[in-house]
Image (tube, rainbow, N blue to C red):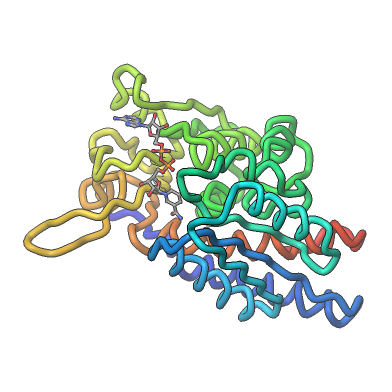
Length: 293
Ligand code: NAD
């Protein structure tokens, strides 16, 4: 039997719709329009596309989008000064510094200058700490999107064995913490894990965030498992360019209970969760409580 395909595009659209409703309600009840400021340093073409897409999505949701495009030659102190200015700007609810930054700038320093309550990427040390401590904070977007997708298959993940392959700061680690918060029994696997196949076979929820095309084979997947494939890998196949995940989709399809495709799975959730974080941050920071998104 074929697995259920988890439609990331549709789920992302419904998250964006909920965000738009929350924004409309903040405007109507409190006269507030949340704003997201994005800082881009340099001319990296991929980053320019991401920033443009984020700006369009922000405006579509009814929020205000502010873009700061700085030349490649901008110094670290200048970027820090801009972040501080945005921290102090009471009309700005979310601050996102597009990564990667040019090599002469220490990303770590710049990111940690962002006020934690405006850190809509959830990458500051304070928000990472809040996540580990189980305190309310802002959570990284891709891991949050992955959990939302898993929960469309099974609302209550409590007690399930979750295996997260990959332990990056951006995806693997926060995703493991979020699954732990859902009361899963979490195993974090990585490049030094021995017998990765056997570890994966134990997973009721198998998340792959590695960056190796089709690393995870069909016979590594437990029958009926929920498979969340975060990987986005560009490969050349049959003379054309393709995007594939970290899971062998064709093989896993026959075994899994549900699976995210690549593209069209986790990918669309990232911007949706960024918008979600921005409206959450806006309402919290202004003392308007928790929005229902
Ligand atoms: P990363 O390179 O920072 O981390 C990769 C992780 O995989 C490491 O923790 C490493 O230990 C582990 N790993 C490497 N080789 C392994 C192996 N052979 N077996 C088991 N584990 C191994 O990557 P990342 O930033 O976490 O991204 C992972 C993937 O997710 C990439 O394909 C990236 O493009 C994709 N990604 C997608 C989104 C999105 O959907 N919006 C966002 C971020 C990342």
